Amino acid sequence: MEKREGMSSLFDLSGRTALVTGSTRGLGRAMALSLAQAGARVVLNYANDEERGLACQQSFLKAGHESLLVGASVVEEEDVDRLVSTVESAFGGIDILVVNATPMQPRNPIESYDWAFHQQMIDYFLKSPFLLARRVLPHMKKQGWGRIINMGSEVLARGIGHFSPYVAAKGAQYGWTKSMATELASHGVTVNMISPGWIPVERHAGTSQSKIDSYQSAVPAGRMGVPEDLAGSVVFLASDSSSFVTGQNIHVNGGVTTA
Image 1: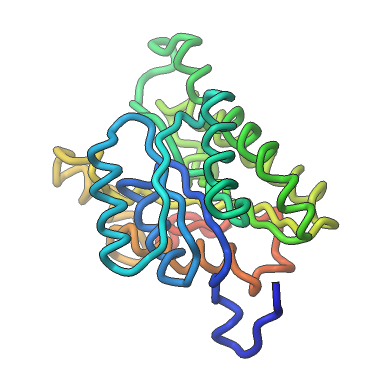
Image 2: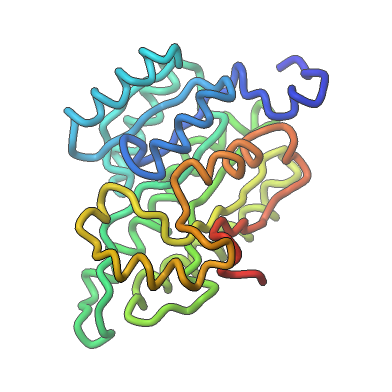
């Protein structure tokens, strides 16, 4: 791809194709929209709710953003292969991969979890990044340019209790991120993580105001985050401006974690 000139071009994603998993609602949708607004072709992904997926894609198309919608489970190897093959047929390959899809994460005492729940966390936060990366890397390596962005969480840095399977799996994902960053740096492929704080989205509907107020009281910035707060980080890490940034974990939580 021809090198772009000027400061604004550092964040210009025109000509790039981005896949954001789990991107028809919540944080995934917000990040997909920010990538589209930066000029990328965006692949929207859902696992089960086709109606919501179609409505999401329609809103992107109506806003003038080139997009593709693919229903696929990112923890199933055959689905991942079909997802990436569909994108390759439409756009020629995936340049930017944002691993965002996630299951629910109920908070419980460690004794109440079974191994099946631990395995689900491992599948989403270790198996899925592996399956996706293995499938998109040949294209990224061939062109000497690629971006892999894993979605982490502040729970790892904070060691939040009653969240042990989720915290453990996110720890494994961060380790995978750092190792892959070292392995792929010479190929022009960066691998980083974004770790948001608690940003209420659709799945948090019904959360009591007292619980929100309790969390917000510990946020130095003095407010709850909103999905759009992730826009700058994801566009930066997806762009040419971050070519010398890899293996890093950016916390987006208003200062709740500072180290």
